[in-house]
Every structure is written in structure tokens, then in C-alpha cells.
Length: 129
Image 1 (cartoon, one colour):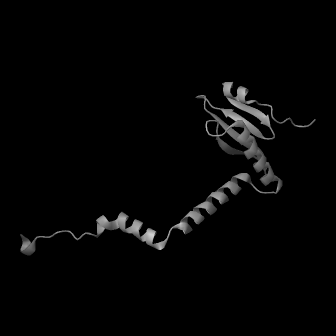
Image 2 (cartoon, one colour):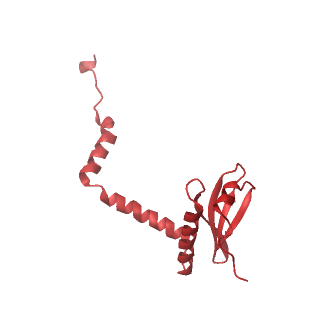
């Protein structure tokens, strides 16, 4: 029997209040927490261990976007990689690129502004006065 996809609808997602995990299919789940907050998770196995990849809160990620993110994560798994590690590597690469975009002059100005207060010489009385 084939796994079903698209079990949830936007209206059903909006009105779900029962605490727990609600499957949409293809490893995509809507988690409803104790306080009523809702978030999207992608479930997969890596080396025999179940992993849960957070895709974002319902407030920020719609059902359609969550399905797209789950599809991307399935592609990463199909290529033999870990979606969580792939996201971490992408974030690290973005930070490196952002750091490269800062010029020496801008970095020097930031450094001077941050450390200027510590460079003042304390005022000392002349001849002990």
C-alpha cells in the first residue's frame, strides 16, 4: 500500500487543537504543543535512528511551504545526506560569505567604536594633588 500524501488541508491545520503529531504524509508532521503552538517537522531515519528536522512554526510557514521544504529534505536524503547537517552547512557558508562582504575599513571602524572607551588614559593629579 502506498503512503498517502496531502492528508492535511489548510482549514484542518488551522482548526487542529489536539495535542500531538498530525501526519500529512511523506514524513511531514504538524506538531501541536501543550500551549497550542504549532510547528512543522520532517521525520526521517539516518543510520537506523529517527531524526526530526524542524521546518518552522505554523505562524511563519504555511502548509504549502512546509510541503516544499519536506520535498527538499527528501531530495537531500535521497542523495544520502543529512538534511539537518545540510542546513547547518548552508548557514555556515552564508555567515562566511557575509563576513567576506565586510571591508577592512568597515571592520576597523567597528573595532575602534567598540574599544574606544578603554583607550583613554586615566587622569592622575600632578605632583600628588
